[in-house]
Amino acid sequence: MRINKEDILDYNQGLLEPHQEKLAFTKREVTGAEQIIQKLIDFQIAIPSWALGTGGTRFGRFSGGGEPGSLEQKIEDIGLMHALNQSSGAISLHIPWDTTSDAAATMSQAKELGLVFDAVNSNTFQDQSNQEYSYKFGSLQHVDPRVRKQAVNHNIEVIKQGIELGSKSLTVWLSDGSCFPGQLNFKKAFQNTLESLKEIYDALPADWKIFVEYKAFEPNFYSMTVGDWGQSLLFANKLGDKAYTLVDLGHHLPNANIEQIVSLLLMEEKLGGFHFNDSKYGDDDLTAGSVKPYQLFLIFNELVQGMDENKMNHAKDLAWMIDASHNVKDPLEDLMQSVEAIMMAYAQALSVDQEALQHAQDDNDVVTAQNILQNAFRTDVRALVAEARLRAGGSLNPVGLYRKLDVRDKLIRERGAKTIATGL
Ligand SMILES: [Mn+2]
Image (cartoon, rainbow, N blue to C red):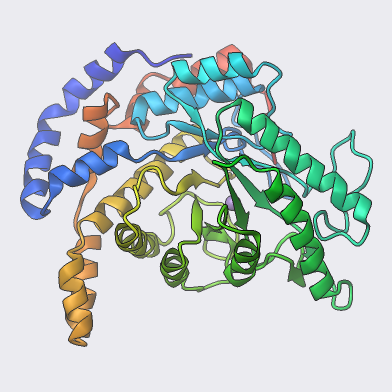
């Protein structure tokens, strides 16, 4: 289904007056509000093709109904979400879960909905029915060169599909590692992985990037071959200029200082992309900003500071993606909540007086430094985020309009109550 422009305009009309009052107040509170609104309009967050269905766990999966059963329907879902919030204008495909047999048709469907294809993701953490060798004991790290070759070839195939869709980057997340002490020779696993990544790197077009994503644990529970940002950075540095580290918020050990990691990766000009989610315990895959919003803000503060120091374009120079899926919410409503939380953290970070913060740091004025950050975090910027959506043609309240239009019911009527999206 599609969201009509008229429905958006009608709905916004009813919310306009209180919004404008709130916006006027916020503009008095926040310096540079107009520039912030413009940056929010430009900022787009890619939606992964696997997040449109209810997420699975090891124990059960509870479909919410009307889930997209094909790539076309997934693009349609992201299109209607983008129509509502004007901030989800990119898709990140997971291959082989979501492949196209007609790239031109897929491209034109996406284009019509205002969407582009962001990073493509390979998958060597599962065995596919048609593959010759198993990834049970790893893929790019495997002791058997035939398994490594198969995994390398898969990644090269993913690059080829990405080229057809206008993508410019490949994200490699490996589940490679070991579950028991003694299972693996760490150095050999690293070297095998490096050799395999080099082959993939050599297949990248000149204007492409490769993102090496790390994860501390799961599915392997003793060692992960790309287990933290240090290991990822080692790979990225050894591979070359087109290789970067990718930070996924849920892929750290509890209480890791992710904002410090982000700051140093930007200093090294090796931060390539970012996966948003939130968690209380591990890789919980919860809605961004739902558990630790202050952490999300502190991360954005480092992102803004580091990107500005490197003269980077906030909207274009890093790959932003939501990487979350869970069991209890309507996936589209959940994604809209994530996007809103990300936009708020970004807006708050943009409002930080970086010069004053630096002075406070140079003076060892800890109280002022803390106040600068906490004042920004405690400022209600929701009206700025809503105004950015309004100016871009979206809804002042995306979830509100989604519910008013009974989108999920319509999708269930169209697609059925028992459809299951491909993915985890
Ligand atoms: Mn991820």
